[in-house]
Length: 110
Length: 156
Image 1 (cartoon, rainbow over the protein chains, first blue to last red):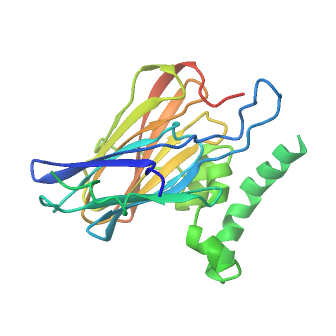
Image 2 (image 1 turned 60 degrees about the vertical axis):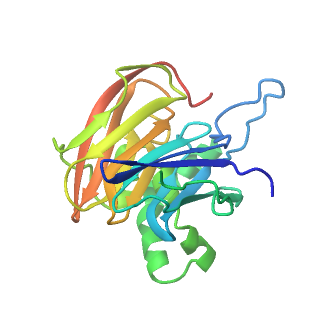
């Protein structure tokens, strides 16, 4: 599999686990024009992300086009301990998807 | 022009009907699975977006929500936003930029073990209020902050 588009870091902080994630994605709004051809670039954006802590969903987000290119998201999960695994997955409006699940190095709580 | 009109009509008329259709099982499972509220995300004003997503009007302001965003954003394509809701049982956090072409930006649904905190980066077309809508314990609260945008980030 190609290199994952997702980077997840999870760190314990005062007993809670702070998760930070970066996703590589163009997040095209469908409003921009290609300057060379004058044609509108079709919308291409992540619609849904889902985040799991040891397999249980802790966060599920619905996104519109107004999330920045290469989205960053951060949130805090209670009750995580060292060695737990946080995984993140996304689905975009073209049906493409990716998940950090297959990458064992990612998202380990430190 | 025609396209825009169609989207507008859809946004204003169909948000209620979609909920009914989903409830009655009219829509195919694929669409229900995705559950992405198209009408809410395509709504052209804050009220329609709120109705389509949370089925309420814009909520009263609450001091328990802390909305951190820059006073002036030089680049509207990347505006960092941080929301901390200090009430119990936060169910969802929604981010809205009032004057974006489609104001609804994102909605985060939080499980019981997740704290009322979300931080992300958004795009803003022009200077406007950023509104954070927090649903906690079945009630809806909001907070807002004006962000001045020097260069818009929504294309065009």
